[in-house]
Image (tube, rainbow, N blue to C red; front, side):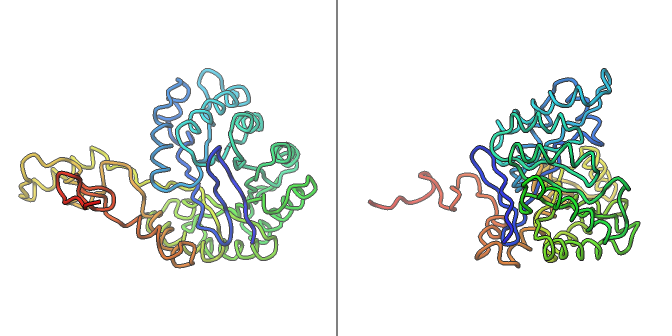
Amino acid sequence: MTQTIVESKSKTAIIGFDQPFCVIGERINPTGRKKLAAELEAGDFSTVEKDALAQVAAGATVLDVNAGVVYNSNPDPNQTEPPLMRKVIELVQGLVDVPLCIDSSVPGALEAGLEVCEGRPLLNSVTGEEERLEQILPLVKKYNVPVVAISNDDTGISEDPDVRFAVAKKIVEHAADYGIPAHDVVVDPLVMPVGAMGTAGLQVFALVRRLREELGVNTTCGASNISFGLPNRHGINNAFLPMAMGAGMTSAIMNPIALPVKASEIAAKKAAAAAAGIVLPEGMDDETFCQLFGLGSTKPRAGKEMEAIRAANFLTDNDPHGGEWIRFNKPPAAEGEAAGGRRGRAGGRRRRA
């Protein structure tokens, strides 16, 4: 069975056909997050710290780290991104023990991350463009790391799944020329939005099966791409991920966290409740209110996508005896109780030695 080994200083994550699905947390990425981008340019890493800890707590087995900020003071990422990548990598690996995925379109930033990253990170990414192959594959070989291979080339992203397969095959063959084995290439077949292309799901499932059977490679994807532009994106993602796993997909770059309910949403719901004549108990806190009215939580927690993944791991026998599923669904210990459910000295009877 194909296995891709990704390591931190103290922990190993295995991406493989016979392994639990590998969740690569995507939150440490300033793309589309103006607040995070501004913080990083100002040297403020507080959000990075929160996102790193919350993603691991939610069940991420690898963390993707992207430092692609376009500075207002200097718009050249070739100058600004490498030193920022070093700082973020050093910070994150000092906070959590899971392996990292170094993510950048700037070759200098990729190498900067490789220089300071402990263990054996995943490199994200190489494409089928000739220039990119010549830039990235030597780094993969030099540092002996696995790489994400994205199925687009100089012609762009094709809607034809046969073309995307051919690009993936080209990358795997070029990697072999550098002495990089197929098990160290994790192919992203590119998920199209199902709202724009009705066959997008079917295409990906067929591509993943073909990549597994014909090239023997592991696969990944940007999981939320499938639901882009549609209502109730979590509902689509929750269905897509187990189906992709059933087709043979072995990892995904995704958000494992259900984000906290915004204060404005809580205020609006309270106003609606008051307008409907609902009288709330005096002193009810926001967390209790959110639970009572089905809003979610005021705290980050594992998202519904993680529930779907854990269930699929159980159903495909990649969670022996359902141990992870049971732990995931076990209610937290009540205050004053130990994790095993037995009360402490003040509340229980001690057994004689």
